[in-house]
Each structure stands twice: as C-alpha cells, then as structure tokens.
Amino acid sequence: MPALLLGGLALHFSLTLAFLTPLNPIKLRLLPLIDGYIQPFFNQRWSLFAPNLEAKTRYLLVSCRGEDARGVSTERPWMNITLPLHELKQRYRLTPADRLERAQMVGVNQLEVEDDELSRKLLEKPADTAEYRAAVAFVEQQREGRKRAGMRLLRRVASRACAELYPELAAPGGARAHGHHPGAAVLPAHGQRGARGHPLRGAALAALRGAERAMSPAQTTEATAPGWDALVEWMARPRLLIGASLFRLIAGAAILIEYLINYAQRGYLFGPGGLFPFAPFVAEMERGPSFSLYAWSGSPVYFEAVYHLGILVAALWMLGWHTRLLTPLNYVFLWSLHQRASGIWDGGDNIIHLILVYAMFADVGAYFSLDASGGRRAVSGPPGPGARALAMLHTTAMLAFAVQISLVYGIAGLYKVQGGVWQDGTALYYAFRGGQFVWPGVTEWFYRDALVVTAVTYTTVAYQVAFPFLLFLNRSTRRVAVVLGFTFHLGIALFLGLVTFSLFMTSVDLALMGDDEYRALGRWLTQLQQRFSTRSAPAPASLAPDVARAPSSSTSPPPG
Image 1: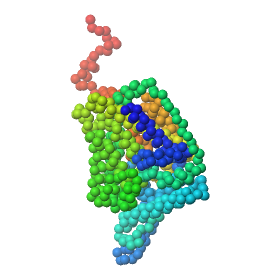
Image 2: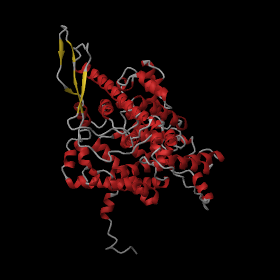
Image 3: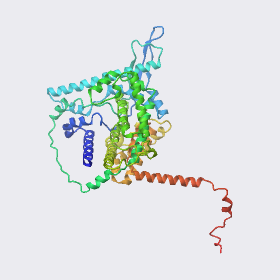
Image 4: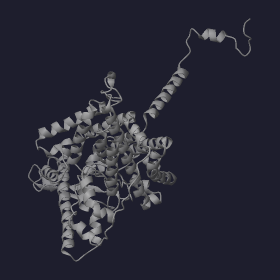
C-alpha cells in the first residue's frame, strides 16, 4: 500500500508539474495525456501578479436609454459602475463588492483576452497545409465566440445597473454598455474558469508536431531504498493531526465567508436568472467532464435549496461533524458554486479546490471538532490494520498538501523573477496604484516610500522562491516558512483586501506544522499567560502585613 500511495502521488505531481511548465517539445507530445488528466478538476495557474503588473485601471461605463412615464424617449449620461465597487472594497475588507466587480470584468476580459500559449505557438509557425489552416480557423472561431459571450455579459450587467440607477425608465431598446479603459487593461483575475480539454488538441497539436523532432524519453531504474521499512512505519504513525484540524477550521470559515458575504447577491451572481445565462452554463457542463449541482435544474426553489445546503454543509464541516463524510460533500457543493460563476474567483479558490481533494483522504477532524468531543473518538483511529491504512492515507494526503503549496509558491516566485517590475523593485507600487487593492490612509504611506516598496517587493520574490526549500530542509526552516507565510498572507488580507485568499493559503500553511510543535507552542502560551497573570495579580491582603514586618534574610541571621 505505501508503494501504491507514493507512486500515485509521484505520478500526480509529475503531471501537475508538466502542466505548469511552459510549452516545450516533451510537453507538446504529452499534452493530450497531461491535459486530459489535469482538466478540469486539477486545473491550476500560479502566475499570480506575474510576470508583470500593468499600471492601468479598467472601468465599465454604462449609458441607459428608455422611456419615462410620459412615454418620452430619454438617454442618461454615462455612469461609471465600477468605481463605486472599488470605493466599497476600500472601506470594508469583507464585502460582496469584490465578486461584483470581478463579474463586471468577466465580459471585458472576454473581449480583450489574449490567445493561450498553444495558440500563440501555432500562429508563430505558419504552414501551407489544410491541417494548419483548419487549426487557425478554429482559433479565430474561438476568439469570435469569446467576444460574443463578452458582449452578452456586458449587456446583462448594464441592464441590471440601469434598472437599479433609473427604475423609472422603461427600456424598449435595452441598455447600452461600454467598457472604458483609459489606460488599457487591469490586473487579470486568476481563478478557476471552468476549463475543459484544450480545444486545439487535435488539429493544432498535429500541426505543431510537424515542426518538432521526436524525443525518446530516458528510462531510469531506481534501486529500492534501504530504509523502506522505516518509511512504512513513518507513514503508519499518525502525525500532523492538529495542523489538519486547523486547516478545517480556517478553510471552513473562509468558505462560509464566501457564501455569506455574497448572500444578498446570490440570485444575481449564481441564480438561474442571474448574470450568467443558465442555458449556456448547462450546455458547458454537458460538453465536458465537469459538473455543478446548480446545472441540474433552472428552478429558483431548487437553486435556493442547493445554496442553503452548501452553507449548512460548510458550517458542519468547519465544526467537525462527521468530517470523513462531509469533506467530499463540502467539495462538491463548493466546486458546484464556483463552476456556476467561473470567472469571478481568485487563486485562493483554485488552491482550495485542489486541497479539498487531498483532504478527503486526511483526518481533518482529530482535534477541535464535534467528532473528537467528549472522548467519543480516538485520535489515532480504530485499532488494527484499519488504523494503519487510515494513517498512511492521512500521511500521504498531508504530503500532498506540502508538495502542492510548494508548487504554488515556487511557480509564482519563478514567474515573478521574469517580470521587469519585480526585477526593478516597483511591482507593489503598481499593485497599490491600480485602484483595486487600496487600504485608505495606509496604502498611500506605503507606496510613497521607495525604500519600503523595493524591500517588500524583493522580499516577496525571495520568500516565494525559497519556500519549497525552507519547507523540506529541516524542522527549523519549516517553522520559518510557516511563520513567514502567516505574516505574508496577513499583509495580503490587510493591504490588498484579499481576505478569503489569505485564509485559504494560511489554512494550508498551518497544516504543515507537526503536532509536537503545536503542543510546545501551547505550553509556551500557557506559561506566558500564567506569568502575566502572576505579575498582574495583587498580593492577598492578609499576607501583606506579615510580608512587610518580615526581616530580610540578607541582614538577619537565622534564629537559634
């Protein structure tokens, strides 16, 4: 069993790493295999704020046209409907304005989205063949399809805005929307976008392969490790249980926040009659291997039932009630919600999709849970071979936590190293000046100090690149990695307002500390509390006179 678990883990992350690398001859030949395995459930991109940040802000302007109560046709002036959301995000760290603003930008992004890496490679190598011409025609078809979908979304956003701004107007001709971007493009939102198998898998791959040479993979055989028995025993010993339980608490809280802060806007963002049309959504689910509970019915009653069931499951999972059962259920409900509006999420939502898959095999309810309360549940699980098997699954899952988060940090850091604004130390200046990520009264102080901006920019890159090495080097460096990660994401939550992203990332970081380390931390905190209580507590009144009259031992000899 250990060999099977470790082999499966190695294969999974080998394909994941191959998926994350730039397009190369080996990846090109294996792309059907890689893409077929990764998409859609393990899809991930970690070019977070990299390789470059654009110092430009994008707004959506809407002009409303309709008839007043007298039947007179009238047109209202252009209104910026993005700026109020930016201002709301600046005032409050927990607000639906973030998702609403991302929903506005989905349509704009579809109008201006760049070709993916495979399409760019294809267009760079023209060939006078029917196969190549068919592939290029398919690329053009995809571009036009994205633009049409983007315009449909913008019209729906504009119609909603006009209905709220001017309810007295009837709109026989509908609302007109215009994406106004005085600079050019805003920072792209990185998150799950309902990806499927690559549309160019057939024609484009064949066209590109004509220009590539075949490569024969090297075959290597590793000798069996001499410490295999020790490794098996290590895997069969319960470990990282406190960290896994903290992951459940923090990630569960973040999932609940996502449900609740968007609760008032749930019909607009996720409902069957909301921003994202229901029929194309159902067709998209039917075309690919993905799924969503929200695609099973267009009934508003069904939608409300699924949404509220998702809240209930997330709350019970966070509290630790039947965690073995509720972990996969929580994943199903969260994945379904994210697929319903796939363009409005960020990298934190991407990482929680992946980690929840691994968490299905982990024991995330050993501590701080209803499962463990009252001594009803042994931390190490039932005795016998079943306990060893569960422990091995848990250890493998926690190792998957560690490798996955290392890929997130490492790949993100390597992307940043390639960016000019990260190389010259100005990236965070542009991030804070974009309008999306502002903490009024604090951000201004930050970006006006060139020394602080440069130091934090370089520290961010250094930390992300170093994280995998710090995590796996030894126990001391692992503590440094986790503490720095906690501090790093606390800063992101405060300065950038990405609260759920920070909570998701922090939950995974904290899962990587050992049980002994948490117990030592608990003892230190208890001692600190006792020391503080002893110093702050006054001496009892009955002892005060005796203490005052007692002679000093340094000046009076003992009696007798």
